[in-house]
Length: 132
Image 1 (spheres, rainbow, N blue to C red):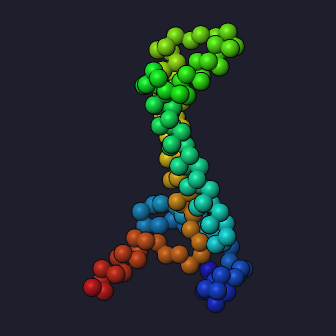
Image 2 (cartoon, one colour; image 1 turned 180 degrees about the vertical axis):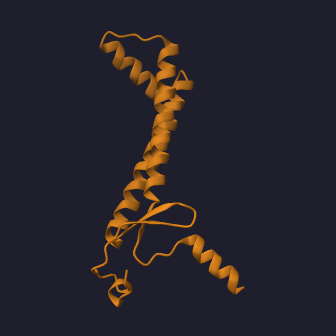
């Protein structure tokens, strides 16, 4: 890759973006700044929503007076289905844990992206410790 003034000004260059491997074996994907911002915003939004929804589901699984649990039981009752309380708790707990796991996974994948010109934070820390 070449270092051009277009990169510093935020313009596009002829460089091909793609995955790079850091010293720790972590693979980062270098993308244009606009895509980096989009990925960061939406991956964080999806991750937070997934984790919060997961905890709401866990709450519904453990607290018998939960609004979500009552709503779900009412909806199933309207359909003519009455699941045992333990089965409903287990399904809600598993769904909550899955939602939290998916949210965490989305966040981890979102952190793999970086924009052109962004250094590796570990490399920056090593350089500053050598100077001090």
